[in-house]
Length: 494
Ligand code: GLN
Image (tube, rainbow, N blue to C red; front, side):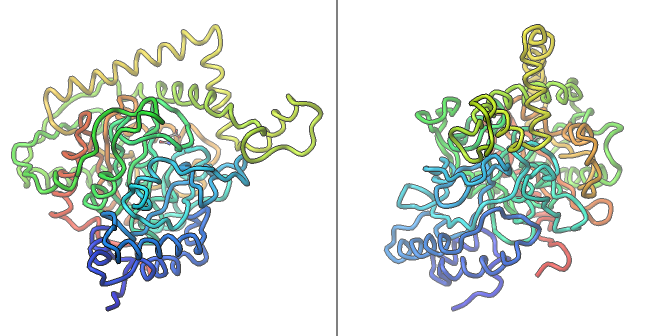
């Protein structure tokens, strides 16, 4: 039996069809590979149909043998900051041109071949992103911009822009992303899909090219909360030997949390998230979603996160500080690009880095080195660390009054390509609603909440307390049962 429109099916539906042998992994992979021709939206950075088909054949063998993983044969694609043995990895940077990792990142392994203990997903390729995950619009990729499937004149968000665009355009049913200050939630919001960043430390960072290690967290992006729950269940769990900040918290089957009642759930609305800077269309969609929650039995509670505005300077001190240290390893010796003409070792370092890094990365390395330097460390870095702790405390105070926090993901819908090209600070400011949860290490997600100006998608952000991913996914799932925003697709999509 053949199923038409495989690309319209959810992860859950595909897994079911594969397990019941209505379709084979090779058929599914072939269908999706055919959609990648011409690389729509410039979403992919590496595609290798031979590798994908070989993985699909191995999945079919396991499906036949009865040794299949839960997501056996379902396609996935990885943000290009996850290292992969079978595909190139660039992190969106020229400096990693030609680099091939000798191993797979833990999350790639956990989602991949079930013979290695993974969920059995088949990798379609690697997804475009901002260089080293620095950006909010995917305009900082060294390999070209990604366009938003809802309006190709607009950005898909960033830094996981390729992941969001690929899922929205049904080029892949689910993808991985990483979120340091919003990079799963914001592109999910801009492209009308669902994404979750788990609690910091809950999913391994091993093999995720580091941007800001105390903030970086991988997570899934898919069309529905149910699909995110399926992937996240496979992604979480301790990796203590390989990631020193991995938490010793067991993996969970998050699908079990779905369909819980929302009766009496207290949803906190931070007043700082609904102030002046919020565009009217985004506000209207978010408030509409909150009314749905009231219908489902939840209670809205006004709360305050008083240091929300400070999260911007705090994040843009701490993240560059960590980046300046993390990126020192890219010096032309061990990985990727090396300058051709140089006079001595130091000259080789300088030329390699000058040629290999893009402007935004250089800006952040310089900012980071400055805030860490003798004489400024106390004034900037140390102060930022203190305020970071206060921001985390503010959340704990808020969680005395509510169970889940809700608000917008971003102040506006996706902006036009090039609009902020000469104004990096405009991009930084637009991160205001996603940075606080990142600084506190809390789980956060974006759920399609409706449409704003020019029919562009709007995401609702849900933030939970530590380890409450199940509660967030359930809340998102219940909204998705009551609405159809996550099922709509961009006009003109084939
Ligand atoms: N926009 C933020 C930044 O540029 C967040 C990026 C991210 O989460 N990776 O740093």
